[in-house]
Length: 581
Image (cartoon, rainbow, N blue to C red; front, side, top):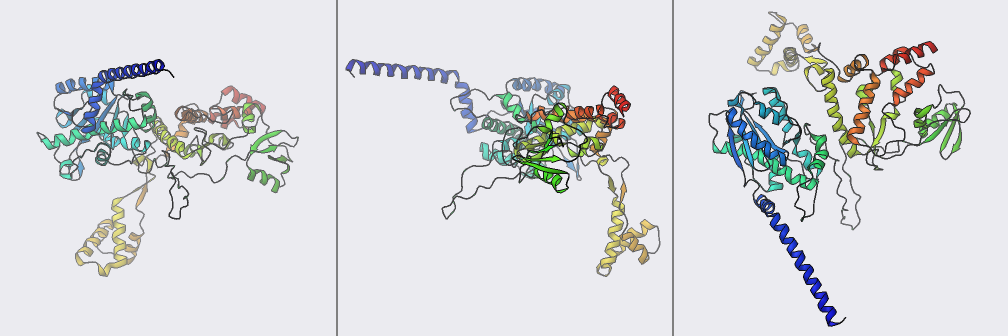
């Protein structure tokens, strides 16, 4: 290469570097405010904190205008509540803390406001603004109980921590590990008088820090959820983050719920002997995985050789062992019945049962481990009529533990909607308890057992008190041994007249008022499609599958009129079925 060519090459390189340097400088100048902000926040996330105490409706209106403007850019608010407990009983929430990502910490003294102003209510009920913290759903429940306001889109930060493989801990521990911020959580401060005429400086800082730190933790974890190169200073894609977090809105956090939601560390552990240890995968609580494939895809044929359906190997062998069929093929295992079945494969419904199924997660495609998922939960299906309980394999799908856990969380929200629609609570509230234990009778039983088991060891004063309990209950002046034995075996419960079983009541109302049980099935199937967006569903899987199957049976005269009515199928179809039968 000649000197002229070398000089030209050097000139080109110099020009390129100069252009790149100018471009980088332009980026730094244009983004200087954001860079400086990030540097400041890295050093001290609470540096830009602005604490404002609100005690009147006018103050509330002014601060809310600023908070709402901050939410246009970053739809997240730190959320926390404080209250006073007197004599073991909680008083109404005294202080509500909301903090924006820009550092505005608004402390609403609800004990002075006496109610939730309309603008504040609108912000709390805005489901597009995420309210973040630790134990947010519990705080939201207290606000709903005390002031009749619904707080929408609450998110417990422990869910987000688990999603990005961080340890889900309390607010103070996450603040220390993620932000290097120390929060003063001394019980004398957290249990101080939040209804005091004037809050002192320590109380104000405590309340403001809890709300602002929650936003900063969210910001840091969300960046890990949607990582970007270090040179990309643009804001996170908020719509993508919201879509991934939506399943966890308004759900109480439970330890162990997300044990297997994130992928386990794939690194091998080297043993002292130099051999690689087998990796131990995290197991999801309450979700057992299958040790063998669900679908064996063995063929079951009618006597003339027509394919009826695919079945598992155990079922195929059962037909052979019972002399109900003969094995006519090995690959795949094929059994031909020696009797005419009650029905043949008809239409797409029949072709669904004829089509081989894959042993993989229908959502993400993972091969192993897998577990069965009942798309229509058993708590509802068990109350269906027999004709709708049979052939339910359509609604049994395979999911990996991560997708199964996520689907269970989505299902919880659907159950809540059904509970509200049908006035059928599924939590352990009074109406969901079949038997109520009576404290008075429990005390009588306990007193009688104490006398029978160790009456000679009981101090005199204590023995007098125990005898008084029994004498008062039986309205007697003297107790006999028989009466004490009767009290020791007394039934301390009574039937709850307001009891209702959630699944049973939902099924009853759907079959009588809400369009039939096929509508309930369709609701759950569509819910699964909408929330999980499965990419690997079996061919011909259909939200109307059971309705189509029952229509075929009605046309063949193989279904009762009552079952069609319960299913909610067309009245004309019912009439045709009755005429044929």
